Length: 309
Ligand code: PSU
Ligand code: MN
Image (cartoon, rainbow, N blue to C red; front, side, top):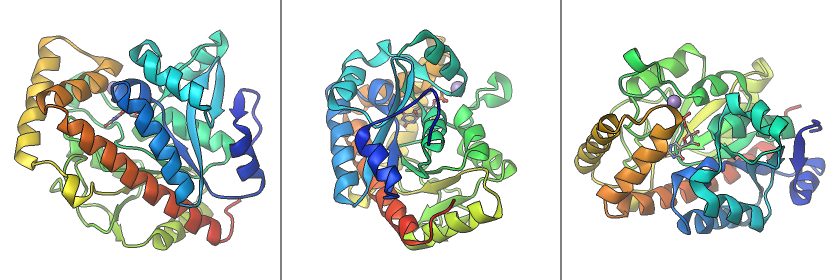
């Protein structure tokens, strides 16, 4: 729990020292994934949801060069208001931002790193990065996948959206030995919709079964994460054909404008939001809350089993 560059919010530190359940949360979703003010509202609602579910929230970011787990409200507001002016920080960006004393919004990969430094096992978010469509020529594969391969943190997400090549993303995870668990589903969810047509590796139906899988995994080998795929609630899912068309339109627009690298995901999210008249944002908020509830339930269940140390 102690690293020169790590800074813990007192509430998070107390929970960790007393061995109570903690759920990590990311900040790229705040600064780059949603517009202001919904980003700040959602980040605060998410923290409240974690507390109501019996765990302590630890929203992660880089603040003034410190790898920070647990943000103050003013820090969440800063990330939300500054938005795209805050650098999106994945694994490769951390050393630079830390050495420069700068702020950064952490992705799934870098939030996993901070969670691991802090000894937090569970992390909940909306969607993960993956193998992009066209990766055979662009080689655009999110560092999130490699992080899942090496860092022992379980990530709850609503699957991945089809701005990615879901088939290749799942193949990559298989190669890297990352178990993909479907919560109460056999079908890997596609973010805005409950089904992608691709299967998960294992269906588990309760937070305790998931906690037991995590415990076994880390007893066998302390390295590597698990992807827990939690479908968006039925009443909030969007029409699959409509989303497929909308996403294809957004991808075509990104190509036309020559958007590349780390700018692609935020660009696509904003374009999809415009094209759906804000409905994708509503669904995004609901699925994040749903994932955070499950994340907290799994953290509580894991805490009820013997501590993994
Ligand atoms: N997918 C979403 N919303 C997001 C992201 C992905 O639906 O906000 C963010 C996450 O922080 C994820 C990152 O870790 O994008 C992946 O970016 P890249 O592909 O550049 O690694
Ligand atoms: Mn990328």
